[in-house]
Amino acid sequence: MNQRNLFKIIALPVCLLAFGLASCEKDEAVTPPDSGGEQVLPGTAGEVTEAVTTEGGYALSYRSCIALPEGGSAEVDLTASLPASGTTTEEIVSNWDYAEEAAINSVYSGEFNREENGFIITDSLLVYTVSYGTFELTFEFPYETAQYDGTDVPEYRFEIKDKGGKFELIDSKERDGKAYALREYTHTVEAVFGGKSYEVSKSILLMRELGPANEPYLLSSIAESCKMEEVVMDGVTYIFTVNQIWSDKQSKSMEYYIVPGVWIDEKTTHLPEISNYADDLYIKNTTLNEGIRTHSNYTYDGLISYFRTTQSYLVEFNYFVLEYEFCHDDVIYDDGVLVYKDFPDIKFTDFENSFTFEKEGEVYDDGNGPCQNYRLIHTLVGRGVDADPGTATTDLIVKVRL
Image (cartoon, rainbow, N blue to C red; front, top):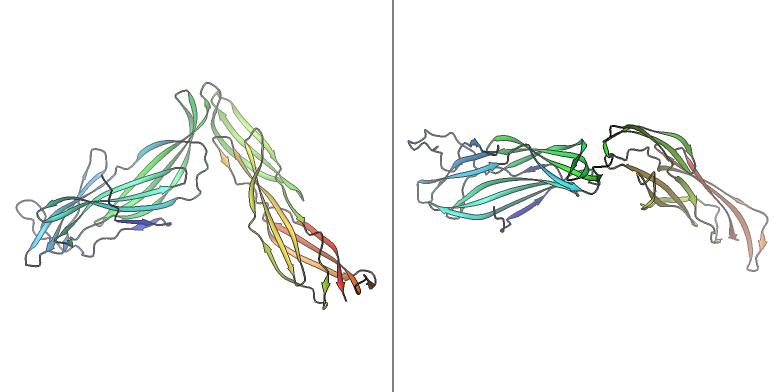
């Protein structure tokens, strides 16, 4: 169906789209005429009838009636259709790095189709797209609208209610001499038209190449356990176990010892001298910056990736500012079939500040007047969901001009 003339585009981030019915509600139908077509009252749309298509979808139709300004009325038959449910397409992908949540988009378009007994009938189309970034599923719902002498005819339009989707892991298979890891995604929507509801599902089979089919390849890979055995200041130890089944009938239980880093470093090495000190040092504010995430390392032949996030933490006193640096590694396991990201959360999320600021030595003259040195000891403690506390201390001498 040609869609050159775009009438309206609607983009919604939520999973409920409503293209409402026309304002005229259906009244009780009168006795059908001898022709067998339904007779409806002026200003109303009649009951929707349906027929199953050869592809397994539905062909819908109804009669609409409009009152004429000069008296009397005119009727027109309008149609719509629903795609068959349960269809599947295939797509080759390079990785499983799709979005965690679907983005929903809807496009409503129409193009002049034909003139019939004074009616201008337009082919309209609702295109409903579910996108995960690296792949997408599209549902198309064609229907007709009409005008008579510039006036819209009572009509039905599709109301789409999103029912969500799910991924299913499928054992790897061979095709054209290559082995592919498989994942199937199925999405379901409820299409309401003229008061009748229809459930439509579509699937897409995602295929990721593993290598040549004449060599052993992974059929399935399942994460069995992940635990954190050791917690130290400069990192933790994950013990990650995976059960694998290979094409050569081997079953393997693979155990990986993973050591990501998590730490705090003090960054301030010097503080400016203080003038007019009123014995009132205090912390005004603290700020944790969003940070920078970089890929830092591969281990176990590229199966495990480390992604390091570095963040700056500022402690603002009323006379000076201290800076600390937080680092933590996120870990991803990817063997081509299984992608695992649910490792313990070791990043610091809560922080405690404490300090002392005390005189150090006697008053002295630095050539520009009397001064007193103070010793600042500031301690920062970071705490996380799964990590033990991390600690860093800034210990500096501050000159106070008297």
